Structures are given as structure tokens and as C-alpha cells.
Length: 259
Image (tube, rainbow, N blue to C red; front, side, top):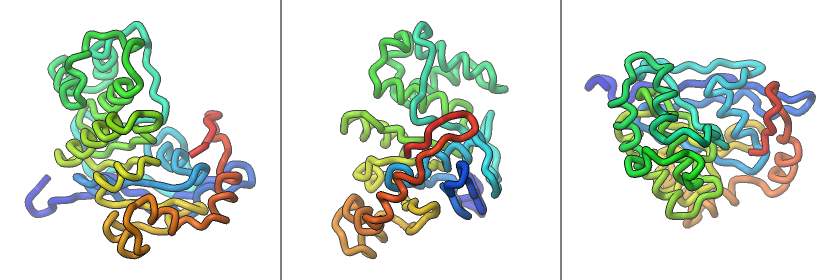
């Protein structure tokens, strides 16, 4: 990053609209993530978080709107960790990253080893993927996403189903990636980890961001003592029920949007 522009935009989305049949999931959503920023997207189940992240990652097209990565990363501009990463069980962790590296120009075995170290998997690099714990599998997914030093990183519920210690470990790695200049957009229900590691929190409900700001600003605005309490204050109970019901749908690939 240059001295004259210390936080260039890593990811910019404008006017994102998405509907499934007659159900509007996202309506005119705007999002900007700077390099070095962890931007968390939180919301009730069914609010469209996974749909939005798939659009940001280029996995699913939006009905309308644009997504851009204005600055170049290393071997690729954007990395994506889906909510349920899956890898071939017979490969080792190192083999898995090497396979992904083969699709990236200028990424070699040294980069694979550096990535294993970056996400804390050096000690299990030669272990078969099928024998990894759930937390280690998520860290491997994170390694796949950051391989090639992308400018922007999209993470969908990286801590889902993990114990608190592993959630904290994973979010600490995410924070270190941001410290190195990566712009991170992460959807998560792990609000204590979000409160500890995110610079900005965007609350998604009823198809758009109903509140955005730093964790500290949201706590002050809602006069609450934790991000979990602030979230409950911001998201209307009646809105939660209708959003959960209305937000569930399938995109063109058949993926259920339950987040």
C-alpha cells in the first residue's frame, strides 16, 4: 500500500439486487471494504448473508448491481471461503493447497508452505484432509482462499460449528491477514469474535443494511454492553421472523440460502 493512499478500496459493491421467484432477498445493497479492514456482515438467519457473499465472490450473479475489486492483489484479486468447504479426503493438506496453487500464476511450493504456516497448519501439512478436525478443515479452507495473496477475502461463516477456542484462533488469523493489507468481508453469527476483531459491522435485515459502524459505535448508539445485545436491539423481532421465512430460497445453482 502506498504512503499517499494507506487504505485503498479492496472491494466495492453497488446497488445489489437479488430475488428468488417473487421473494426479494437483497435490495439496493452497497458495501465498501478497504484493504486492512475486517468488515463483518451480521444478520438473522435467512437475511441473505450467504447470497450476498456469493455475489461478492462472483460465484452467483446478482439480478442487478456491480461488484469491483479496484486494486490488484498477488496472483489473484479475490479469495473466497464458502460456508461448507469440502476437499478430497485422500489428499494431504499440502497436496490440497498445491492443487489450488497450480491454477495460479507465480505460486509455487514455497508459497504453499508459507500459506500453511500463515493459517497455522504447518504441523499437519502431511496429514490427510479426511483426518483433519472441523476447525483444521476451516483453516485449510482459509488457506485455499488466501493462497496467492488476494486483495480481497470473502468468508462465509468461517466459525460455524467450531468450539470457542477454535473460533478465536480462526478470527485471530483473519485479523493478521487484515494487518498484512487484505480487505476482509466476513459473515458470521459469532458476535463476540466479530466484536473483538472487526473494524466495521454491517447489520443486514429486510434486504439491506439497517445499521453500519464500528462495534464501539453500535454499542454506544444502542446503549448496550455487548455486540450481541446491540444486535438484538437493532434487529426488530417481527422483522426477524418474516426475514427468516422470506429469505430462504435457492439460487441458480440450487444452493439454499439459510443465512
